[in-house]
Length: 380
Image: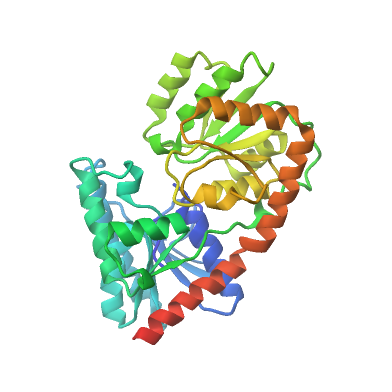
């Protein structure tokens, strides 16, 4: 597997996906090697729960920091070089996760003589509301298109994303397979911690980008200030939209009750979730929304925007509440409902726990992914 992020290097949801998938495949008896990028806190070659993790040193000071495509294309050369450490071990499949590892995936499939499978976790066109601004977005879209063409089989994480990938890249429908994200409930379950009385605290986390909709949450909290005395909100994460989000918060006059926490450790996030009255995922665009599963696994009543994969997770399950993307009035009503109605909150928790057990274990998702590998190998 090729992934530009892998714990403890975590930028978005890809790290959690590849980590959970790789460990589940190892439990099922498969040999898994993950090639990812350098992180100062871990060695460049390590075994993690039976998964061998190789990391490429990407220190390239002659490339400008703001040229993402150039830096990732160069880093892919180092990812390919990692294959020299495999000695006589030979994979059956190369699996590239998103455009950021496209070059390495295409090169390794030829060097090793094996099929390439690609997972498209999101598209650049989707991130920009269905159109491509001039410049880098068009370049990334072209790389995504090329990766899906070069891959033997393609995986997408929701019906929404399957439709988007097929239509955006003009792929045969039979080439694109639906395999959802999953969640390790043991990592997120804080039920064993000391019980805490839930506060009127709203928690959200993720990459701080415009499409994540955190500014909509800030407006909803502003509307709730007088309806729910003591309401507070913590938004955790880092990203390029952080200055604009802080400006939104200041303009809404909620800087005293909405905190931008930046990066928080897993332990800190678990402590927040134990106290939280609810979790909100206010995305405007979301191919899947693994944070929704994480919030449910932590036992927090979960409120999500009716968009993309988020809607597919929640709609018709009574495991969470939905609101229309961008509608801060409706979001405020949903938050108020959860906080004011303990019975509703408890019902959501119980239904969410059942949903995760039935549909989103990593072992089941690993099995579905291996079935895609089998198709790729049979086609060969």
